[in-house]
Image (cartoon, rainbow, N blue to C red):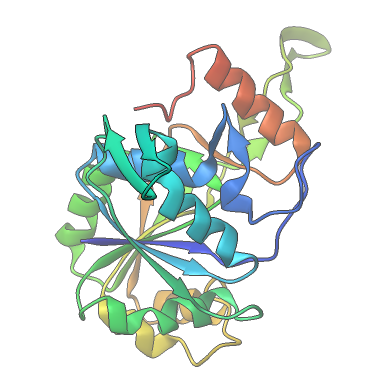
Length: 253
């Protein structure tokens, strides 16, 4: 089963990092893209299809150079040959597809249809991390027979929380916590027929397609009560860095 990662949005600058595609923002010295692929791979999903757009060449370069940068090398400058030792153990196949600079999320998905062989596929964004059990997500999708499953997560309270009894503070926590309610967590399982809900390049997946799937009774929600976090600000990157450095990163596999 192929895993689609949307990595084509415009870049961002977090902290001292240069403007780059968000999937290349580093946590613990590794891009979010690597963390995501490690998560999927841990559940046996090793076939990746990455939708490129803004500065897609940087993502291409990262993937192309991955083996050599993670291995010991013997380079013969006389003939230009390179011998690779101790190759990375990941059994990954990665397809990198240019889907346009200004194409919206739905349009990027539709442009990938020829690469999906008319089969069930997974979809996620390239800027969120989670400890979601992907096997359970897939089993849930297969159990209901609908076209689409969206993972529902609790929104994050970025500034921690206070727990009161009347006016007395019973508990004070400055770490991000999960609020009540549910929101789109960006981990999907989809049938190929969802392409019919996407009109073209300017279609935003999160708007009409998902709304119409829900209206037609074809959208089911897998409720994930565990960790989920998206990186949009320096603070969020800082939180994930601290979790990784302390060996307490929930998404670590």
